[in-house]
Length: 554
Image 1 (cartoon, rainbow, N blue to C red):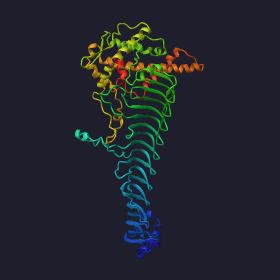
Image 2 (image 1 turned 30 degrees about the vertical axis):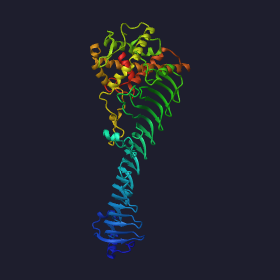
Image 3 (image 1 turned 90 degrees about the vertical axis):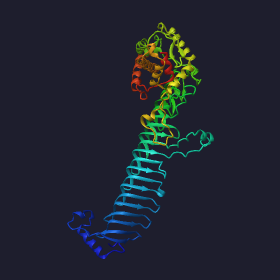
Image 4 (image 1 turned 135 degrees about the horizontal axis):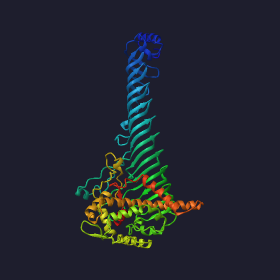
């Protein structure tokens, strides 16, 4: 009572008596048989220029009231024995406000904070004056930049979604041109801000999460640490599906990397799928191919060996000679499993699948029809009669392969026309990166393949009436499955050969049996645990152009 400048003397005296009787423990008032003095309305002014207007009980601020600080801060709401406690409304001198639950004078529980001008706004959980628990923080007046998720001690911590403001749309001369208005073409949708959804730790991206850069048209899904990709993850460089009338097959998918990361760079072991169908699997360092790796060119040739700062250390002239031309003048058919074993390590490792592949071809018919594939208009592509009897030696096998590759070379344009036509049948478009709606996530966001699918090849099989050639649909599926196994076997054999050669260099022995055994082990791991492959028989599995051509040849 002595702290008040003006207060009723009788109220102050009653308060002193009641407090003394209850041992000055207002929180235990309910335990006393005697009820505290009745609440009364009043006004108190405090030393320092502060004031209170509202309910009193036993000489204390208790009930509802308004408290004004000298600096202009004010509070209106519940009081509990001289303490701001319950539900109320704070207003600060700069115009920011808080409305919600309070405890011991601090924001605690559920509440809404609104910053100056209404730009910054937080709605959610609080603990001891800090954002804590589940809540949403909007960073601007338009509310297109916000974080929604978990908080700890005023920092984003746990699981949450962060969306950044979209870039300001740029009005180009094309968008406002008379031609566009005349054709009544729709204006491009407004740009969308970048989005991250996943784990956070002390205001930084951490753990598992997905980041979509709409401005750069990129997406990363995987592990993070201190705001950087770190651990295992997949990065996709998003691109539009190519026009069905465009020339070439240089865009069969989006560029995609799946593998290890360190502090925001590709570092460790990973696989990079290139848009033209090429593929690299091996070691990385600071975003460059560095160490041992296997590079499959878009024409089917394979380089296996060391890389240094993104360059092949052992130059592969045969591969370079057929890949410099962007139109892919020639494709390399990897059909060792259909031909007699060559005196090579690769053939030895692949021998395990030769019998199954031969049976597969026999099941498809060996009549030697020249019309292997036909266009709907009646045109045919002749690959010649290569099944009049399997060649008896490696030289004859090489001639068979060479004749097939020459036939492919003659009909490359027609094959590309067929491939692109059927690749665009019922093709699901990519999720638009500038769609103002919510971004696609999960399976819908993974449509990054522009290559033909097995389902689309089935349509080609129907149009060409391949069943009349005794090539059943089941046979087609088995042929493509065997082809992929053969490719993996060849790469595994090359990898095993290098591993054995390294062991030999260090005095650990070298023999072809060891190579074949090592290749078999590598192949088993590759074919059963490859993280970026779908079911080998799935109708949605992509078929690259070189696989399409080789499948027809098979």
